Amino acid sequence: MFIFIIRSIITYFVLFIIIRLMGKRQIGELQPFELVITLMLAELAVLPMQETGMSLINGIVPLITLVSLHFFISFLARKSLLARKVIDGNPIIIINPDGIQFEKLKKLNININDLQEGLRNSGYFNFDDIEYALIETNGKLSVLPKSDKRPIIPRDLKIKPEVVGVDVCLIIDGKILEKNLKQLNINQSFLIKYLQKAKINSLKELLTVTISNSGTLYIQPKRGKSIVYETHHKGGILK
Image 1 (cartoon, rainbow, N blue to C red):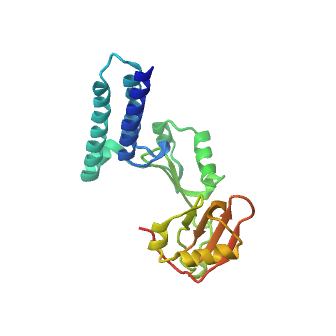
Image 2 (tube, rainbow, N blue to C red):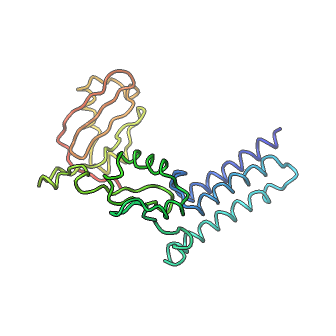
Image 3 (spheres, rainbow, N blue to C red):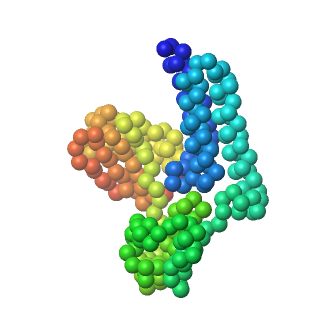
């Protein structure tokens, strides 16, 4: 039993490192070759955990071989347009200004119900609203609506809105993120001033504290309502 536990732990960490090295992607975003390698990794990882008669090294070598193959294929796809076309394929237009392209749907094995579902997921319910629709190389549907069907944007109204940045966490689960404070040029006294104003007596009471590019400080206690303050802090980019 102890051998099974040790082999499982070692295999888990080897597979964990491999997946991290391969990069962060959701299953739906994987290219075909990445999905195949991921499925094979899952199958091969079981062998060294179950087969005690197999050397652990012999079980791990195929995993390392597959991830090496992944990096080699990715390198080819980056360096060669021809290789990229063979490995990843090309996006395929399934709706254009002439309408739905039946032959393309047939080639991709997509029926009208699948297409309607994809359009609804993109926020469109009528075929007539669509100028172009493409199936990307990872199988996702990209939609370009007709100009009179797309949402109005500030540029249409000749408005230049204030630049909006990503909210940056300053505190998570009661712990101050010193790196983020430093990069945004915020000192702890600034933070403590607003926490005292919000009547927060201990960092342990906090679920999270974030600040926006415009200086909006969002304080969320673990219990109770969130509190928002407009501060003088402006800008800051995390690297």
